[in-house]
Image (tube, rainbow, N blue to C red; front, side, top):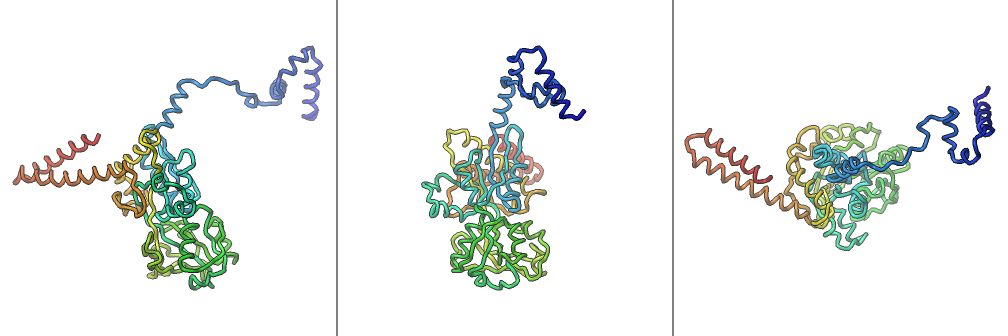
Amino acid sequence: MPRFLSLFVCVAMLLLSGAPASAQSSKSDYQVLAQIGQAPKRALPIPNKPVSEDEIARAARINNWTVGVAGGLLEGTFSKYAADLGKALDDTDNLRVLPIVTYGAVGNVTDLLYLKGVDFAITYADVLDYFKNVEKIPGIERRVNYVIPMFQGEFHLFVRPEIKTIKDLAGKKVGFNTVGSAANYTGNIVFERLGVKVEQVFQNNALAIEAMRRGELAGIVHVVGKPNDLFSKLKPEPGFHFLSVEYGDKFADYYVPAELTSADYPNLIPAGQSVDTISVSALLAVYNWKSDTDRYRRCVRFIEYLFNRFDKLRESPYQPGWRQINLAGTIPGWTRFAPTQELIDKAARTTVDAGLARLQATRAAPNNVAEQERLFREFLEWSKQQKR
């Protein structure tokens, strides 16, 4: 007997049985089908049960010390550094860092301002001006602070064979990555300041390269730390090349001279050659929560872990750019998050104290190197205890 006919007969038999109509109507379709063997038990509605106190406590424990870091697009540099923070600072219930895939530098500040669960964000130094002058966010310098400067993000301008100078792009379609990325903002600044008007196309750069191959785009803008996977993994295309962007007074506010070399992209730049460009400093930003809030408490713990475990980030397999980062470095135009400045000041005092301790140990045991070292180590151990 066909399956659907068997089902029909079984249902008919149930309906013709002596069971009252009210009892039949009280059962759901899933319950009826389960009775006749046509539906698995997992399809039945799960009875509502009160959440246990253990589960409530577990949820509170998981959320208590969890912070979100707005990273960027998967093919960008931000997401890799955010992932590093997630791995290096993880301490189970004591601190959990959630790296978040986002739109990029501009979108990250928007997320920091408005998206629930975002406490930190990686962005570029020039982006704050966008929120001052374009978005006109009241008190943006007070609401969004920086923690530390990070790596340099190089301006990559990758073009088709027929494009020889940046002026050749005038009137042509150029990819500026997805809306909210650094390519949108920094790319627009570069072309505006150089007086070259192009038709901006907003599309993921991995897809935009395919559009370049088809001749639909003359080039793309990508602002990321070098070397970047988008170009490192790109097979050489005849004539496709990076275009030079010359540093000058027009870029003296947030940018510094930089270059892309054959060591960075051996598949795209001939051995021994380089391409001049500019770069902008990336930074770790934080929302300036009030000091009596739970979110402020979490942010302070995150920063303490960052400083205590920073040496770990300088080791493999973390991004090599961590080795060039100066925790005490400054970002012009930005305000440092107060708890961060306190840690920097404390570290500076400890460095001075360590130097004095070494000198005092030498004076205490002038002819005994082993004793000098013992006294100095004793001071370091005492110093650690004072920090706790």
